[in-house]
Image 1 (cartoon, helix red, strand yellow):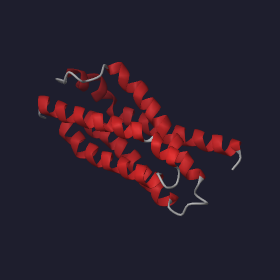
Image 2 (cartoon, helix red, strand yellow):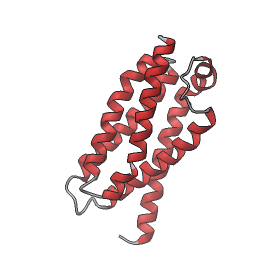
Image 3 (spheres, rainbow, N blue to C red):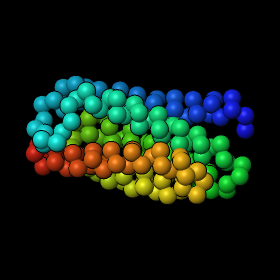
Length: 161
């Protein structure tokens, strides 16, 4: 594959993942602005200004990782399954934003974030034999969702909806 096709593939992957993040933000916008600031939060809750840049970087890594696997689709039979699981975790990511912020429910967020974490872990495992770098690009995402899970649990405990 030429470098132009690789760059175009990477751009498409990044744009698609950023779009998923944008959809999630739209679905949870009111809760993000009005509800979330009113919640009791633990001492380890990051400042609000941290979330946007972190998610923007993570969506870029996700898109790049997916494009790397997509580029190997002709040489690896497992790319279709790996990309299907990737798509499922991306959908779960959007669903978590809707469940937590859109529904304004810390408990609904918990019901979604645990399967999301598992889908990310499975995606990493499926990406590994196809493109190690792609799998490694998802590790910060898994770590962030691990942190977000702990944060979600603690916010749920402090606010019991």
